[in-house]
Length: 410
Ligand SMILES: Cc1ncc(COP(=O)(O)O)c(C=O)c1O
Image (cartoon, rainbow, N blue to C red):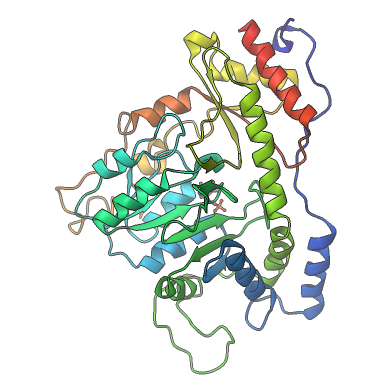
């Protein structure tokens, strides 16, 4: 069969399911907020309810709602209260939000290379990159695929490090029967439009540690403990103003009720598609660690151009021509190769904190090609499909047939 990209007939003309489940439930709760005329969390009900219900859903004691996934990570770092120039080891394939949270506290992002099977940070590479300045690890459960948390927690325990799980893309993801986001000291989630559940923008930070929970809450509210806006004013901590509004929390409460259904649907469709794409020479479907549960925020495929017979870019074009969504590469390069990091110019025309006396001349982070070679290679060879909570078996089958058709003609 001639490929659609070469003038053949597209395998599918009906669009694949897309979009979010946002409707009546969200509208009803938002209407309640509007009618209450109380839009800020001071004196409001929805933000405290959303925090309490999300904490309960994840079986932890504390949750702080904030304005984005980036702020959810920043309050986690702020709650730890590191010294300037302390290092956090994180993933080279992630969103800039992970890095902003580190640099925002004048700390140094250090990058560990990935496990080429899962694209998640490799515990061996994390251990190699620990220095006397390391205070924490921020593993990212990329695309909804669990990191090897047992090994990461073992390393953290050995070196006395904090672990903040970046769970932005990984609602419902499990590692050996435990929910990702609850295995490290802190878990941070994004509610941005593309995520499993969304409030447009927003973030959630969870922890079971009372002291961290208290500091994270303060850090998200200018360091001000006075949520009722009454009594004497005091600021025991430095912090930012990252408060979620009542309107956002109203949407979040309605979305939370749908969370398990949405992640179960992603897991079902993604696992089925993985199964149907086995055995194609030169093409690797997602690989999940034994006892891991993947919730497929995206569905990455990797192609060995020589064995598969096509580059990832041409493959992505060919998939789109057949009628399915697909993009080549995900973020293009490892995150440290983007201009803002490569130049190390964060504040004005200085190179602070990288060249500061505090950091010292015996530390250096080489944000250049070659720093994380497995991550570079994976991004060069990757193309991402996606599944949606409304995929039927026919949708999965059509998507699999598109990939098989391309593979046969590659
Ligand atoms: C892995 C990861 N970390 C952090 C973020 C930052 O989240 P937000 O865009 O909500 O600030 C995102 C979202 O794109 C993400 O995917």
